[in-house]
Image 1 (cartoon, rainbow, N blue to C red):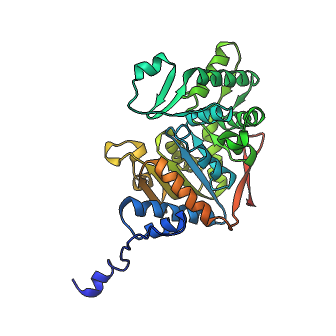
Image 2 (cartoon, rainbow, N blue to C red):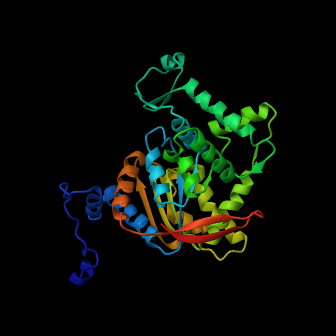
Image 3 (cartoon, helix red, strand yellow):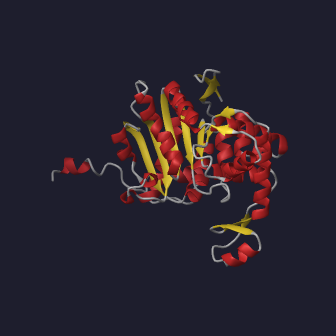
Length: 349
């Protein structure tokens, strides 16, 4: 091969990583010139940082896995308070555990080697190497049920329900340090498209069994989040894991297209996952595959990092925090109308 053709492939040499750098942000910048998932982690920070520099772009996050019991709660709160995300789609379980901690209850450092029969006899639930008391969980179940009773006869999206729950948590506990409370305070909508598949769903079932009609309309969720995408113009997505939140955000592009919007997929896409594509599941499927559906734009900046999110999130968010210390960002303010329509006004944070 001619030398000038070889040079096309050898323009950027890798660099030995300097671990004596003074900050996590500098460490991550250095990882851009390493290899494998270390480089991908650094590329995800770069892509997320570029998203936040866009003039009018809405950042949407999908949150799965037991991130709150695993200690990631304040990481997500930081993203909300500093408008590094503008819309959150979560499992109901993460938000239940978030409310649980906001009300003063705890998760505990445990062990994956514990005897589960013995744990059951002592009323201890295990999430891999994290413990919690079942009796305390049930206390939170009933608090949610009692709150739901105050909404008797109302029909609402999960976004509306979680906003009201966030307001309640702010009144009852340390809401400003919770995901639902800070989202309520800072105007970040939260959707839970599989709300019944969680202890929040259990609380709503308790209320229903006792004769209180609380109707969370999940089809309204589909309409509302699609309206966010339609009104935003440009969107970027960040997925922690995959599951229902990932597809719920992905399908907004398809729904918007069916409704006649001139949309060609999300403009940025980042995912932190331990799943792999070759089993055919959505959690591991590549963003290139999503291009075939029109869910991700062909020209989008796409970064998938195959890593445990409890490792990735603290590093990535800390690096972003350093980069955004002196930056101002125009973030979307969502103005919901009684007829279900949505206006977006971009404000400066």
